[in-house]
Image (spheres, rainbow, N blue to C red):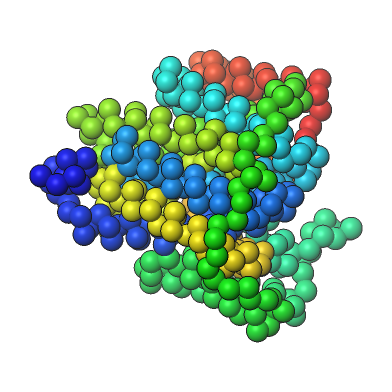
Length: 433
């Protein structure tokens, strides 16, 4: 019996090495865009893009390896979309904290996440927060990402009278971004593996001809990770005014990671009673990756929904995730290519991911206003206040108040009252951010 059979039990899952390798390549092509997008977003917060690129590849490789060998799941990990935008554009650029303090918040939230997972509190919190609010977090993140993507692409611009307005559609950058978005949608609809990556690379190539971009080669030794390694500021992250930032990281990590793990595992047929022990291991794997990523120098790491592409291609074991890990390690040597990708080349991928996140609106109970209204408030307040924290706060408070005054108190889990009270206290005594 070879080592792949011994470690991953391929026969038991009705799969083979070739199928798992193809599935791993499919997942990698679907999520490889993060190598270009994450340094671009965190670079806007002042972080060294080369170091972030290395940290992104390393934590994707390490997290996916842990998932592969510890949980034997075909699910890959990498820094999460949405959370990196909150990290850069809200915590650093809007609230004025340093990126080192933001990394500290990621570290603290990761520790809380791991403790909650080990004590079984993660399941309790998930059960306590209603489906409508869970859904609205994903939708709100999608709207928030869409606003950032459209702004980065130049499709929308600031306006003193109307706050936002249409950008200059004659600029080559805007035209390339819009064409890149349409290309991604078409390729995805035609089920072409790596549609997001192809779209990013296509716009990047076009930028050399129409956007004044400069080519610096493809291969080189990996940049130094020293500028971001162990640079987290935990002391600031534990100050009173910063705790709501930690809470947002924690809650979004909680719902995003757990929802992805459950959804992809269910699609792979792994959520059966005899394999639930492995699901609990997968929860620990993704929890541990968060604070390791903060030490390396990147925003929160999470399970990737793009893993569903690999599952669709037949991936059923950790060999799929291990394949993804090895490919991310190999990518450490293409840093010059990552460095020339402009923001308007990654914006189409951001917008596409945002559009897909909005489909969760169909899960809202529209005929029950005490569920639907808090969900909509949560989703709308995230982009309109340019803050995921404010969106969550308004959503939780609205939900608690509506249930209280419509005689539906018994429908509310005690966890909801606690979180709503914390957010209300924050607004009254600390102020909004």
